[in-house]
Length: 241
Ligand SMILES: *Cc1c(COP(=O)(O)O)cnc(C)c1O
Image 1 (cartoon, protein in one colour):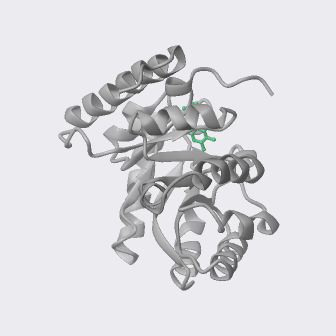
Image 2: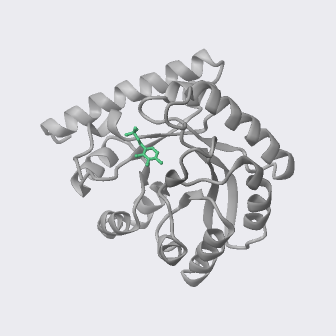
Image 3: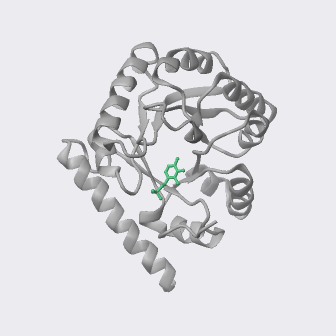
């Protein structure tokens, strides 16, 4: 085994701490310790860090900007065997414009930030063009107070989900949300769990919940998150932009 450099050791320790937090939160909720999948959000961090994380066993990555994500992961995927590529899952978690969505469909495995029908249609078209199918989640705006962060309002979920389910290239897998600024994440994610139950009544296989970031992963896991999206707790503070 090659010796780890300082940055790899730092990432290894951070990963261990985050994994322990997820496992503790899961056990406290009466769930299996490995019930929630860790997605490391690698936005702003370089290819070298993604490679270090892959070597440390991370399989799921999140990115929020098309340009950055496509360049970074083209480099990662280029050197990867088919088997290695198949083991990686790239989650797009950022706001999308419909003119960019077709491009994201070329390389993302999951798009978690679908918040309107137009985006879903553009993703489906892009996926078709590239001969792919895409997993998508509906992003929920839990309180409507911050439209800048995206998300469908709770009352829009059912129609949007039906639209997604009608698109052949897309597979609806669940809901994603960010706890509203200033809100109690416990209350926010409890509400998300309710919305997930409503969604599953119409779409039983859409049973995934993406909830919880570095500061509130415990609350996400407590309320049934199947995926947590962690940036700074693994990679450190993001460089200022
Ligand atoms: C950046 C980002 C994250 C990770 O945030 P941290 O607080 O650094 O863990 C999670 N979800 C989305 C949608 C993000 O944009």
